[in-house]
Image (tube, rainbow over all chains, first blue to last red):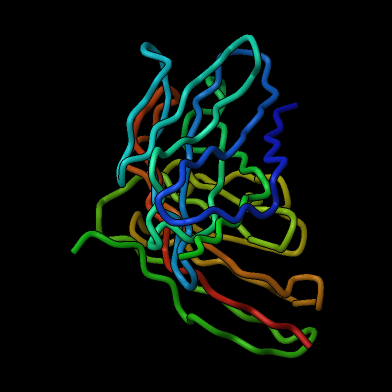
Length: 115
Length: 116
């Protein structure tokens, strides 16, 4: 069975500091991996995705993520956080058998940015 | 503007009173899906549809029904709502229908349902 673990429920960082949000997955084959962001009162917006190829993927808003097969991880990073990055972040995995559309989500990490 | 529209945004109802949450997309997407979001549990898939008249159960389908009579609409039906269905619901759609795809999901803005 597939699963996604986001071990940090809540992270607080200072504006301008670097950020890393952790994501570990369990899946029987190479998965499709995603990071979504949810601002208060909004739906989810795709930040970036990994399907194959280069294990370091670039996304919108200056985010990047690195797929590490040996660690079953897909951590999200940003070198300098802006106050507008405060939101909830979800890691998700899609299966090659069921397709990239049927996503299994982690429980989310809420990011607070302090001035 | 390309979008997924859910209605209503907020709904308060009582146990046992049938309700429908509508979802419509204007992108001619073949794939549509419903999720519920609960604190500490993230998003869990309720039902999905690969195309018109084709629907399948997700991870938490109990207590819900869906239909896909037209490509653009995918309503979520609660025949007899219960308090444990109090949640934030999201509809999503995607262009791709095949199994190996890189078409991302587009989400609606959510429907907050309270069942008393």
